[in-house]
Image (cartoon, rainbow, N blue to C red; front, side, top):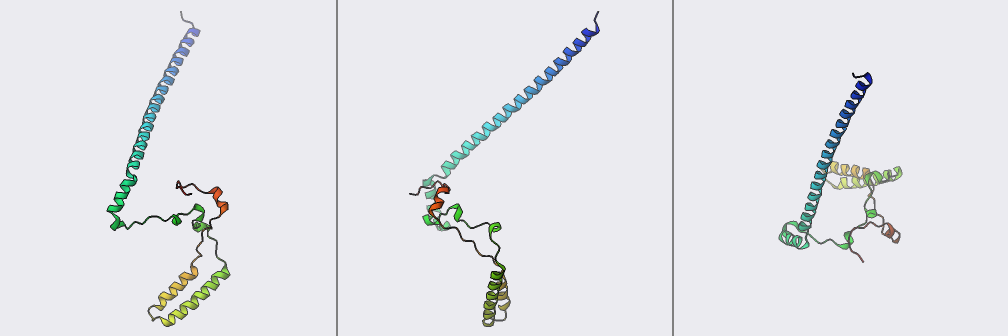
Length: 167
């Protein structure tokens, strides 16, 4: 004779077994996913290593020298001068960082450009006069070109490492 208490305990044990099985099944699925992701990571690392090895082969100096000699007539390559290398602070400013020109400076440069275009228009033929006026308008609208900051001793502390050897 089964009492109600026994039936409740059997129900609880069955529910507990079902929950345990479900948790075990989910854990096995997660473990399979972890193994799959580890395999993908290993494949990507192997691919990276292979690409690094390929890059090392492709960028060998003697190979590049042969290519330069072979295609020198077509490419007309020149060695980079050491004075052509600049630091990040010496690069021109972004367009968003360019200061807005003063209104009085813009009027003065527009007046000078108009006078110059008027003088050149009298010398030029009637066909080229509209082109000169367009050039004067473009000159009046042009913004000043930002100049790079000069190199100084104070900048050496926060200099960007480029990997080059300079002594």
